[in-house]
Image (tube, rainbow over all chains, first blue to last red; front, side, top):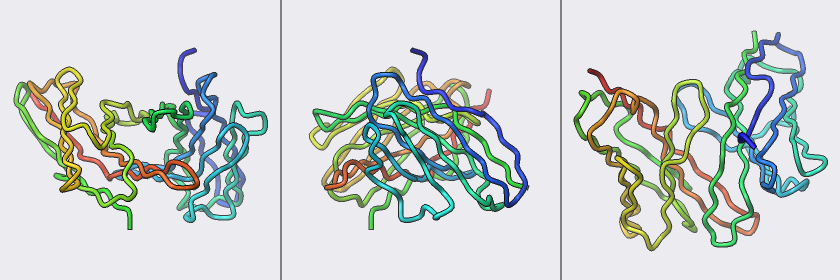
Length: 116
Length: 114
């Protein structure tokens, strides 16, 4: 396994269009996270899954955003009716459910979204 | 309010010199603290992870310290190299009933010049 992969790596779309990103975590990892990062800022937590269950969702997450992890493996993040403010790098990370309280998240390369 | 603040915002040093990056946090209940290195256009890469009881942890030329009493951490880079040029992000983990939440700092941008 080569790590967390994300597709596409880049996406340019027009305002109002819907976009969907995919994340494939490390195969044995049961936790999967989505983050958003804008230029010059640290990553901002969006949501995370434990297997197929979405356990936490950021209060900052608009209703236009939805994430799924139907089989507990790959995940998709959909943004409906995109706005220019959605332009950012969308990062996915995966980890094993920590038994010792020490969780290490492994990040994918990200999907860079540009909304025109 | 859970917050992680890093300083300086940016730093320029000469190759071979040492530098120290700071991270102050107000996160509760504290679980652990991580330092990540993020190259431009790439995802973050974990450097160290420290729990409440750990004061110092090294990873090659990187040494992280943690003072849980003052809620401060530092990342010291020894004998810097051009490849150290990146953003260094401090992330503090808080555990609650819903699971683990990660609070990210905005990062320190380090530029190493020859």
